[in-house]
Image 1 (cartoon, rainbow, N blue to C red):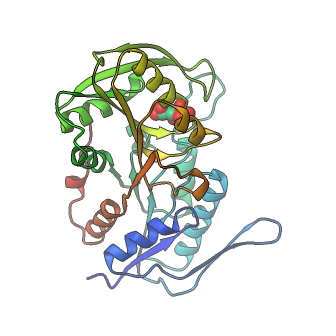
Image 2: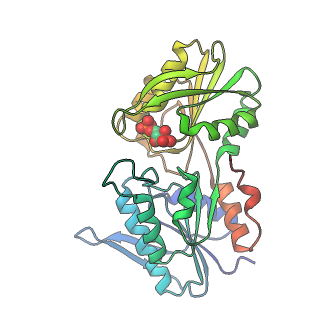
Length: 317
Ligand code: R5P
């Protein structure tokens, strides 16, 4: 059944690609990935992929441009090697936050990346927690969009974080549908932190909407980048009398001094997934990593068998 299934790993997250391949019972295909002396990306697929159903696992995380370019070049190599179908498995889609023009003369870079992927040879996309649902519409090829929320919810329930003493908190107004869906899964209450961004990568809490006094608050976001939103939100919740504050997100971007910021924040625990590989210097006892490998492997298996993937979607519309 899986005779034509092939998994390839870009350099962003080889451990995740290996975990996916292991679950599917196939090896990661051999591919040389290196750089020429001037920094150009060098790719050579070292086995025949003619007629194969190829899945390339690459998060376009930092260094973002390197990973995007590497993915484009792998796609070009696969197309020229006559792979039958090429699916980009993009656990974390970088540039996703540039999904609209906020001010005049700004680009829509999430769309530009979508165009580049299709031009380079992608036939389908498999992604996890895209920053905005409308990014699916930037592609003219099928997009299977998975959510890590159930994985996170199961983990929280196992730890006893559910029911009416728990309040799920959205760290901004835009994240309310995501937080509402988690609150439903945990049978918990909902609260909202209203924040503003005076400039990119800075965040200020305006107010907290909802009852948090004496409760355990679970903040949920798609991305923790500088950690500013989550740390400021946690401080505000503590000031409002929350007993405990936890945070969870799908994509642990953790740029700059985010790890230190989370370490000194009132957060007791930060739950993230492995859509982005955490290097040793970003690991901390506070950060708990859950793996999306089983979810992605299941989706790949279904795509390969032409079976329905929708059961895995669980959107929060
Ligand atoms: C933005 O809309 C995202 O959903 C996250 O809230 C944001 O990227 C988090 O950024 P930071 O950790 O830098 O505050």
